[in-house]
Image (cartoon, rainbow, N blue to C red):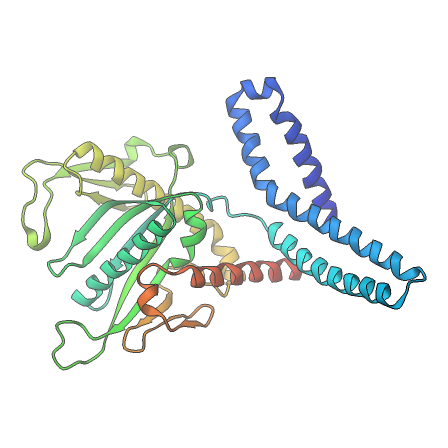
Length: 357
């Protein structure tokens, strides 16, 4: 590990010098790449330098203990040594985390797809609840939310809603939300007060650039039609809605929220790219996932990941066994405690897997 850290620090210093070189500055593409590499290394280098400083403090404390000291100075040196050893161990663990391979998608914007599952109108209403939850979370992080496609219901929920969250690190924070979310509550329309159980499916996909997914126009069938609203009512008198079919994979994306056909087509293409990228990634990771399923889950859309129990005011994540009794603030977007626990667990699993290889 320390050989790797030395290499990272040397490379960091190398990049520092290059970034002030006029020749490098004049080539904006190279300069941007170096800036990103520099930024990616910053936390590791800072932590490694802290590690070396603490190690040096421990060495000095040991040297003091070898000298003839009065009782008070001897106790002080022992305390410093004990404190330093504790710090060194903690920093060492942090460095192991920082050296774990990073998910290349972590810094990307995300496309979130929420669909009502079992439960009819109640599932559609809970889709609306989850849309609000993620929108409020984005708002707290000063991220931008844009609806890309939606199928609202007359009761105020969604059969399906697809939206983009734009913000640095959005995917790193939200990627563990993919899966089946189960809700247990008494619907407003339930006269007898009986608790109903419904499910909603969430998919979180990283936004994909044009260059990352090569789409051949010959593989696409693009249809235009008139947009419709809840209950089948017509909301548009022009053919502005767009349906794109990717013939090789059979994937179909429809967008009708915008009045402009061009804007609907642009949004549909973004969703299609994200779904194709996700499909390719899933196929690549299938063997690894089969060999070692992380406790945080495979991210499979069919996997039940969380239960929201409204009568008991609790939310439980089944992958890590964490239950929080603050459902009211959770559905208002205060989900960091759950997300932090999922990220920590994922890192621990990767560390353990690395030590077993």
